Structure formats: structure tokens, C-alpha cells
Length: 427
Ligand code: HEC
Ligand code: HEC
Ligand code: HEC
Ligand code: HEC
Ligand code: HEC
Ligand code: HEC
Image (cartoon, rainbow, N blue to C red):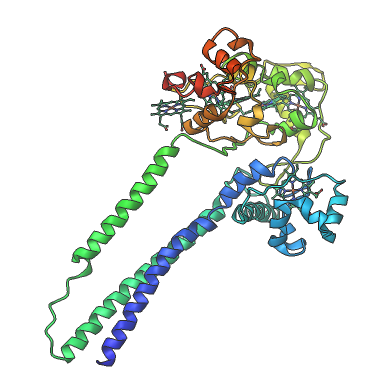
């Protein structure tokens, strides 16, 4: 055999390699694009005690992976079971525990190292962005989405995939020409090559790939239309739930009285704010920051409230009718879904935080649950209702009362009461 056909085989080998590389780079895109997932995991598991940038119940997490002995590996062990790390006599851990007055961080054995990596990537992203924002003179000052670096990664891997695919195509062409040359040399007639855009195999492969990709993105996009988990809009006043419901322990129902007695929890009017803020005209609590890490002046925010309420703090009286505060609505179910707070809060005795997350630790409220149908239905399937100790059920569903007494069943779920029937939630 000639050198040329040997070369041809090498080219073929290279083609296969680059195609394989293309395929493998696809799943990688996911691994790297997951700072967004990290944000969610952080908010669900860590946010009630940690802030990326400043100390709270626990230390600020930004940059810690470079400080702890053993980097991320140490952090995996720590997060899985910090008590075990302290008990092992690890000097750094024991010191830390003493510094933080023996507050025990709960163990998170359910988080995989990938989960923890995502959390740490998210923390790093927030910290890096805050640093950049501090370095650059305040430009614009509007909400920027934190997803930017994740999509940059996506773009990068997309480009790499494309380049590899083009290289593969070029190599295929080279391979074909070389084969032809080899054949000609040996005097074998080769048919005129079909250009690639008329080559049936190429067309078939490209159509199938496009079809699959389009299908995948369309379904995903369609399922998520109207959903907005983690939505965290900028509000007209920087009103912090952490300051009010957390630090100052104001009851949720003081402001959201509707939650116990109607469908809607309702947003309080400025009169309710003024009950306290006629007297409280400055803010001296812990320094507040926007989600991007910019400092907030609490006293100036209270002045905004005075503007909306039409209150003159110098004369200590209302001087005009004020202007309604246009709070941006965060949670929003579609119109065809019936949901009542009263049913869940007063009858079901479900805590606000189960559905809304650790609101009392949020400076800026974000949507914690995805509010999908699966979310509602799963809870109805698994949650045991307060059945025997509930006046609401004392005279209905007698069958279940009897079965409970006879020990046939040990609990009643909302699904057993019809909570998965379509018409309960849709009308
Ligand atoms: C209930 C509060 C609480 C929660 C929830 C919590 N932590 Fe902690 N964390 C602490 C405290 C307090 C410390 C300081 C050490 C101590 O007292 O145990 C700490 C320390 C740490 C440290 C070491 C920091 C340093 O200075 O070296 C890391 C890393 C950490 N936490 C990560 C996490 C992650 C990741 C999560 C979420 C999966 C989480 N923590 C959830 C309270 C908490
Ligand atoms: C002092 C009054 C006050 C208290 C106390 C308070 N809130 Fe709020 N809440 C507000 C205001 C004002 C808004 C609208 C601005 C915003 O979203 O931050 C709001 C917004 C919300 C939202 C988002 C509403 C939307 O647009 O979808 C939820 C959920 C919520 N609060 C839950 C709670 C829970 C749970 C508690 C108790 C832990 C609580 N609130 C305590 C005043 C209060
Ligand atoms: C079973 C889950 C669940 C519980 C428990 C719950 N909420 Fe909600 N909440 C929701 C859903 C779903 C919405 C969106 C409702 C809509 O768009 O019609 C919502 C919306 C809100 C809003 C926005 C305004 C409104 O009424 O639509 C506020 C404020 C609020 N909840 C506060 C609270 C407070 C305070 C509590 C606890 C006393 C609480 N929620 C308990 C699920 C829950
Ligand atoms: C039950 C009393 C009470 C009510 C009602 C109340 N606040 Fe406050 N507010 C406080 C206290 C206490 C502080 C903290 C003062 C301090 O630490 O110096 C505060 C601080 C603030 C601050 C500065 C810190 C921050 O969160 O940015 C703003 C702005 C504010 N309130 C706005 C509002 C608005 C808007 C409402 C109505 C939705 C409201 N408050 C209702 C008691 C109240
Ligand atoms: C955290 C768990 C949980 C979630 C999430 C939840 N529910 Fe429920 N739901 C309950 C429980 C528990 C009850 C029964 C309360 C009772 O009557 O004791 C209930 C009752 C109801 C009922 C009354 C059913 C009846 O028996 O007539 C409706 C309607 C309903 N839920 C709709 C929804 C919708 C819509 C959503 C999602 C937007 C939702 N729920 C999310 C736990 C939940
Ligand atoms: C516990 C409450 C609940 C029950 C029971 C329920 N749904 Fe839903 N459904 C919802 C909610 C909430 C949404 C809105 C989801 C969203 O916005 O993503 C929804 C959305 C839908 C949609 C719109 C498609 C979509 O995903 O947005 C259809 C169709 C639907 N439901 C059909 C049904 C049928 C059929 C049944 C009975 C087998 C049923 N639902 C039972 C709560 C419920």
C-alpha cells in the first residue's frame, strides 16, 4: 500500500477523534454552566446563615476556598459534616468553631461534591462581580443578571464545538482528495465527487441533529413559559424583609394579614408602614447591600417612603395625598389556577417559609419555588393534613375518620381529599 493511503487512514482517525471530542464537549457545557444551579442550591441550603460577601450567622464565604487548609476538598468534608471535622481535631476547624461561639453548622450529607462545587462557583461569581463593580466607577446602577459568566461559558464551548466540527469537515474533504489521488495513481477511475451540500448522508445527519436540537429547546422553553423561579426584581424602595421580619421580628401577618383569611396575602399599604415610620425616621441597623454588592443607605430609603406617603418629617404631618408605591409583583400564578392562602395557612397550617423560602433572611425577595403544577401536586401527594385536630374536617370525610380509628390508615394526605383532581385547581 502507498504512503498516501496510510496518510488517508491517519486523517480518518483524526476525524473520528475530533467528532468524539465534539460529543464530549456537550455534557461539559452543562457542568460549567451551573453557577445558576449553584445560586439555587445556595439559597435553599446556605443563605439563611451565609452571605457570599459579608459575615452573617456564619462567615462570608467568598475567597474561603483559598484560606481553608486543603481547598475545596476540605470544604466538601466540612459541608458534609462539620461536626466530624471539628471532632477530628483539625486545628483550623476548631479555631473557627470557637470564633463563631460554637454555633454548629448543620450537616449536608445529601449534597454531592458537584453540588458543593456549583455553590462555591456561585459564591465566587458573586464575589468577583462585586469586586469588579467596586473597581469600576458606578455605571448605570441597574440590575444586572448574575447569569452572564455562565452564558459566557456556554458561548465558549459552543464556539469550540463549532470549530472542531469545521475541522472535522475539512479533514474529511482532505481524506477524500487523498483517496482520489491514491486511486488515480493506481489507475482506478473515481466518480466525480458530490459537493457536500448535495451529499445525501450529510443532509440526513444535519436534518436529524437540527430536528433533535429544535425539539429539545422548544419543549424546554414551552414548559418554562410564564415561570420565573428566582425572579428578584428591583423594588421602588429597598425594603428589607431581613430587617423587618428577621432582625426586628415583625410578624408576617402584621403586613400580609390577608394570608390567613383570604385568597391573597396582600401587600401592605403605606399607612401600615407609617404606623412605625412616623417615629422611625433613620436606619442604624447592619449595613445593607443590593444583590450585586452595592451598599444601600437605609435612611435615604425611609425618606423615599415619606415621599410616597406624602409625609413631611420636619413638620411631622402629612402634607399631600402621596403616591402609591408600585411594588413589582414577584409571585404570579396564571389566571386559570385557583390558589388560596387561607386554605394553606389557616386550615393547612403550612408555614410561609415552606413555599416562600427563608423570607426573613432576604434583603430582596426572590421567588423561591417554581410554582409549577408538579410542585403543587407533589406536595398534595406527600403532605399529611392536620385531619383529626382540625375543626374544618370534623364533620366531613367520615370514612377516613373511621379508618383512622380502626387503624386501617395512619394519616390522610391532601391527595386523598381530592387535592389532585383537576377541577380543584383549574376552573
Ligand atoms: C444554620 C447556619 C448555617 C448553615 C445553614 C450553613 N452554615 Fe456554613 N457555617 C455556619 C457557621 C456558624 C460557621 C462557622 C463555623 C462554626 O461555628 O461551625 C460556618 C462555616 C462554614 C464554612 C467555613 C468558613 C471559613 O471561615 O472557613 C464553609 C465553607 C461553610 N460554612 C459553607 C456552608 C455551605 C456551602 C452551606 C450550605 C450548603 C452552609 N455553610 C450552611 C453556619 C451555617
Ligand atoms: C413590615 C411589613 C412586612 C412584613 C413584616 C413582612 N412583609 Fe412580606 N412584603 C412586604 C412588602 C412591602 C412587600 C413588597 C415588596 C417586596 O417584594 O419586597 C412584601 C413582599 C413579600 C413577598 C413577595 C410578594 C410578591 O410580590 O410576590 C412575599 C412572599 C412575602 N412578602 C412574604 C413575607 C413573609 C413570609 C413574611 C414573614 C416572615 C413577611 N413577608 C413579612 C412587607 C412585609
Ligand atoms: C402552599 C404554599 C404557600 C404558603 C404556605 C404561603 N404562600 Fe404566599 N404565595 C403562594 C403562591 C402560590 C403565591 C402566588 C399566588 C398568585 O399568584 O395568585 C403566593 C403569593 C404571595 C404573596 C404575593 C401577593 C399575593 O397575595 O398574591 C405574598 C405577599 C405572600 N404569598 C405571602 C405569604 C405569607 C406571609 C405566608 C405565610 C403566612 C404565605 N404567603 C404562605 C404560596 C404560598
Ligand atoms: C412594626 C414596625 C414597622 C413597620 C410596620 C414597618 N417598618 Fe420599616 N423599619 C422598622 C424598624 C424597626 C426598622 C429598623 C430601624 C433601625 O434598625 O434603625 C425599619 C427600617 C426600615 C428601612 C431601612 C432599612 C431597609 O429595610 O432598607 C426601610 C426602607 C423601611 N423600614 C421601610 C418600610 C416600609 C416600606 C414599610 C411598609 C411596607 C415598613 N418599613 C414598615 C419598623 C417598621
Ligand atoms: C407545601 C405543600 C403544598 C403546596 C406546595 C401546595 N399545597 Fe395546596 N394544599 C396543601 C395542603 C396540606 C392542603 C390541605 C389543607 C387543608 O385543608 O387542611 C391543600 C389544599 C389545597 C386546595 C383545597 C383542596 C380541597 O380539598 O378542596 C387547593 C385548591 C390547593 N391546595 C391548591 C394548590 C395550588 C394551586 C398549589 C400550587 C400553586 C398548591 N396548592 C400548593 C399543601 C400544599
Ligand atoms: C394542586 C393544583 C393542581 C391540580 C390538582 C392540577 N393542576 Fe394543572 N396546573 C396547576 C398549576 C399551578 C399550573 C400552572 C403551572 C405553570 O405556570 O407552570 C397548572 C397548569 C396546567 C396546564 C397548563 C400547562 C402548563 O404546564 O403550564 C394544564 C394543561 C393543566 N394544568 C392540566 C391539568 C389537568 C388535566 C389536571 C388533572 C389531572 C390538573 N391540571 C390538575 C395546578 C394544578
